[in-house]
Image 1 (tube, rainbow, N blue to C red):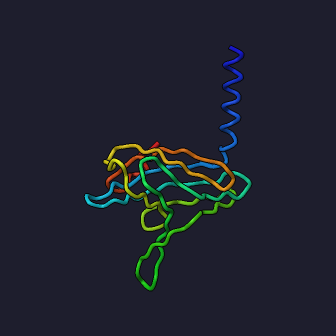
Image 2 (cartoon, rainbow, N blue to C red):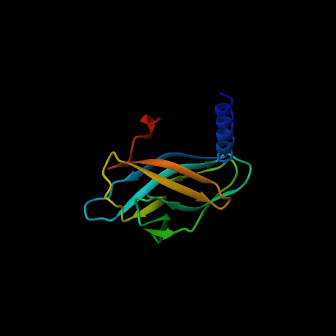
Image 3 (cartoon, helix red, strand yellow):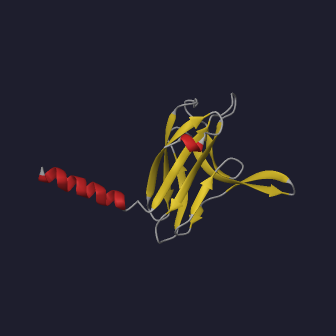
Length: 146
């Protein structure tokens, strides 16, 4: 019984180290037939007191994942790859359609609506978040997710 209690306390302490970063509402858009790229979206918050920088997102289901942002170039929407995203203390950043987003290349096997995919988010501080993202055909209704 004491051994179990010590194990539970150690687990809680290890988890507490990452509790300053919060990732919610993770979802992936199902790619249309013949398209090898999925879009990824989520809300990332820094509830800590130090700046955190997201440097990498990975998953065993994709050959590579890149962070991108959409911007206006003389009235035309364009995208550019961003190597990292910095979050100030107490701030959140939303990855969403037509804004900052993930580009997930070459899903293996191809993703279908309703599937769940594990994503790993790595930070310059050494922290890591593992999140499960659900695959949707369109944009999910955030008001009905818990």
